[in-house]
Length: 454
Image (tube, helix red, strand yellow):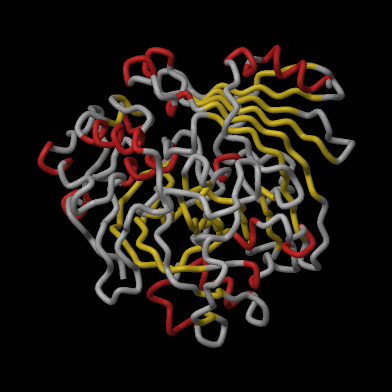
């Protein structure tokens, strides 16, 4: 059951017009850190206690952890409470999405969800909480909801009034100031065969820099800069992508460039957006599927449906472990369910419906966003016939050194081809580095060409 809460009921019929929406009142904002967590989640437990009260999340790393390590499981002693399988999923249907149910029906002999005790581990630095409190009464959507103003560093809309505000919270959730990561993706066939595509990536989050101000962000019109280089296989190595994501996407859409090793040239790539196929993804995801959703929301009407208690992939430290190989994870039809951990959490439900006159391979998308972190946990995607097409899961952990809740692996299931794509494989790689502070000159077309030629 989807529950309408707080300001949501009044917002159900709210249309995004030509002017900015009203800001949250000071009296509403005072709930942050009181009845609500500093990021806007319900602090209290749910009615039956199966979702506990939030007590601050993880605020320090487990004993023995050092920055640079794969993150150890702080709940290694937890046991599976029960499993949801094809035999019993109907008993839990109220706490599952249509896409999750479809996977039980599609892979009845192998797909399952091991359910554990719910641990509300999401946390951010105090500076992010302070910035979120400031944003609450000043942040606004720009014309049509395709950009924001009045926000920096923290969650822009901790007390959201419509679906667009929720999806912007996901886009701008805190993941540190910058991060460098090595890893890969694998498109897995129904028989279980795959090739790993290796990536080196850097992300510079201008929005999250400690000295970022709403005024400067709007003037510079840059939210973040992203650079990706293919490292393997040899035939693709050196291919590179650069993205500058803008604050006001009406004023100036995303800028993107690609470097092709065969041509040894950098080219503008205006089509790196929307439903353009993702890099080396074998047609199993769109560009705007990356990170569960990214980019301009302008092709959809966004409706905030309310909240739902849902089984989502949370605290997946076993899946993240350096003691697990890619071959352990990548099994036929879906990743190895014995390495996954599912918990019941409250999520926001946002439905995106394609606008008349626009095109996209997804006619409708339903996003289920964790209330504690604003991470999209599940996305159900429908084709132009209204049939379920794909379902995606984000398998999250807390990165202690930031701290932040972010996925360690994103998995996209294509229901038509019975294949899946796993993005973020890093078990056999060095761990993410959140300590880097790259310069903006490293995110230019010239720098992209230098990177591609190495």
